[in-house]
Image 1 (cartoon, rainbow over the protein chains, first blue to last red):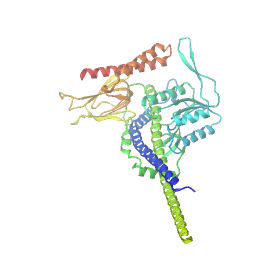
Image 2 (image 1 turned 90 degrees about the vertical axis):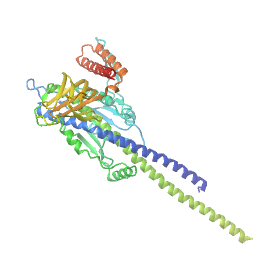
Image 3 (image 1 turned 135 degrees about the vertical axis):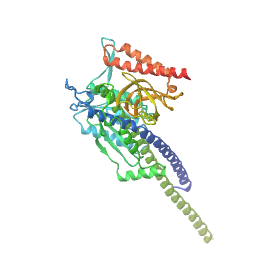
Image 4 (image 1 turned 45 degrees about the vertical axis):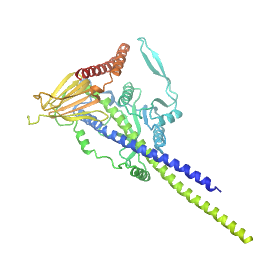
Length: 357
Length: 149
């Protein structure tokens, strides 16, 4: 049986752990608040892009009347043979099942499409590490053509699923220019028929209690009116309750911020019922706007995912803190019992010693 | 259609946040096909923006002796003009003081390198041109800022 000294040491160690988890929880709460603000600040732009595209689409024919060509390659749908999967996970652990759940959804997607060739683009360090271990990395070789220009030529596939790229550190400081680069990369692969469709896997975050894992179609563009979500996993009621508890104790609002007014305002962008003068031909406007749209979908997914990661970490650390407190209580009780037993034993020894005299 | 104010409501929105929102008397915009100036009561217009400076003239009015101007260097975006409202969607917008000139210079060099290496791919030229014009616009904008201050 453990003696009092051992128990006291253990209690002290658990107390230290509790200190750490508590601090991590508060840090995550602060980061979550900032991430939420950023996600909110990014909303008007995304809304405006969507509404201007909608209105442009209403007014302008997608097909060129004379040639019958579709006016932008991103509208073309092809049979899905090669699919790009963009997996947005977290950069760090200690966030409960956050990263595991995202990867699970990604694996499910891959398992559900066994006859397709899937390229994976991993955003976030945790997801990248896991996916790299599981799937081979695509091989590129540089080739120089007769004009002295180097092209990256992709080597033969090693399997139906390959990791084509990763973006370490993209989420730590979300820079628009890097997300733009990613968007352009995806678009160029789509227009050059390297891929037939692109899907995003990420954790959507509306508020602490309203979040879900979604699979969203990025390309081809079929509809702009809302996110083209093809699969979603909602957290259980129990998980939601835990998250709400954690948020409450860290002083975070659990309701999503009210942005109805700003949204209404943003929706008006480009949709007023008047005849616009288009400075450039419609095709050119589409060509300029569509990359912006892809970018804004990606950027939105990343800001949400960052917020969700912090929320998950906050919840996990809150649970850890509570568990540590429970453990300290149990250990203290146990320690007191042991101490009492030792005292009782000593008294019995003294009394029986005196009786023997 | 003039009322007492004759003011345009101008908003400058970037992917990260709404950068500027206020009333103005006139706005100058760098469209891809040339510069535009918008006053109150302009016909509805939709245009793609290139790289350059957006000048937002605030202050009492055009007749005012000291009209104030807010200047932002934007690269790529869209603008919607309505008779009383201008909304600018920019990929990136910076105040002239915030421009990192050495970095813009590097960007210019990179663009010129891209141009030289483009071979006969049309896409590569377009990309190079974009990089060059963006860098040039930033450098000019920054240079103007140092002159006036």
